[in-house]
Image (cartoon, rainbow, N blue to C red; front, side, top):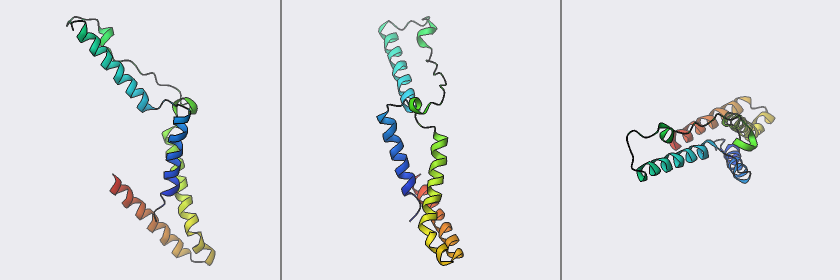
Length: 127
């Protein structure tokens, strides 16, 4: 099997923990900005939609680039990607460690190549 189990479990746990702590992710910020733009457009249409209207009402809200605070903005994506990669490597090594214990280093390396090949195929098919 391709080394997908630990990475998948990690991603699911991160989403659950972020939802429990009500972290604001980029998706939430984009959704809030879209709602704000829709409300402004509706208010402008209701007010008559004059062409010379103030630009302050039509400007898109500037989303301030916040500091990466784990409990506020969720887990940084780069950190999560590194952890998923390390978990995949560890999962593959643990599953094939038996071959090293018996002294079959070529079988261990062949198993790693097979697992990473299967992982590449799975990612290609999912995309």
